[in-house]
Length: 365
Image 1: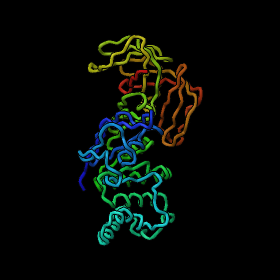
Image 2 (image 1 turned 120 degrees about the horizontal axis):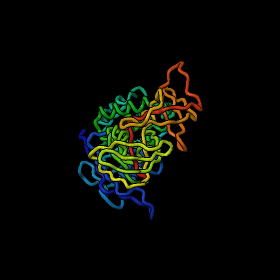
Image 3 (image 1 turned 180 degrees about the vertical axis):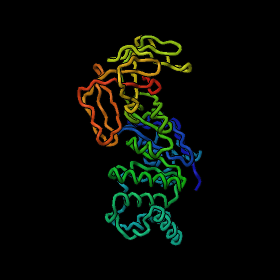
Image 4 (image 1 turned 90 degrees about the vertical axis):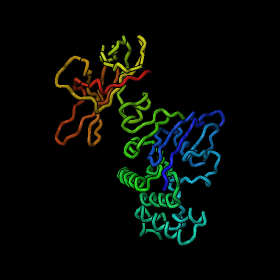
């Protein structure tokens, strides 16, 4: 199967005066597992359906393998889509559900038999061909939907939140199976989800959308470690945000007045092109796991930001405990690994917290 690219060039889609997609530009590589991540209403499912042909854009180009398919009807595009609801025919057997697309294409009987058998084997359902969908588990129904899609050998596979109907344990298992299947087939795959964990554990790269605008594109690590803005930082993981005001900017550092902390000197690289104005409001940001508890009070220095705070409460999350820490009039989160027998920090406990300045990011307000 040939691996193909998918490109969106200045795609715009509006319903009346409401813009749903605003100048979307994406370049999805051949054979890539690409995720569209964003909250409800961000435009990710609209974009997926546009690629499938169910939505039409008013401006821009949609290219598959370098060819503009924007004017083609859905049935003329060699693109397969797995819907959130799976959309299986309840009155048909598993075998007939998988064969449906081939029947519509008037494939000869011998080829149809061979391809359906191969697709069911690929998803581990060879023994379930004569069952009806309501005789299968949620995970098995998802495999049927996948088999029905890949049996037609599409150039591109579209997945619209296919794991959202499954319980957490099964979601983990199925996303691993889904990724293994995609790697085996080598098919270019675009996966829509609002679940950051699903996107980060499966995608080669992903795009974060908000209100129809692509906020950032990159690998999961890039988006987590180097978010382009506060929205991406908060959507891809959890981010502490402390309000601060710029006091001065120098060639190698910024001086900030951080609410609840005081004056902080934050190193900046010589190649940093960001210019800040005096008294400009910014947000000093870092991940909860980047915070460590100091054994004694110390002063902030060029390498470490030291913060004094008080425990307000906690959430037990299994592998870790997330503490809510009061810092002046603001609060931040602190993640600590959980070990059996180790007592939790109690509300009211005063703490000295340390954050390496290498883990701090600044965002303009």
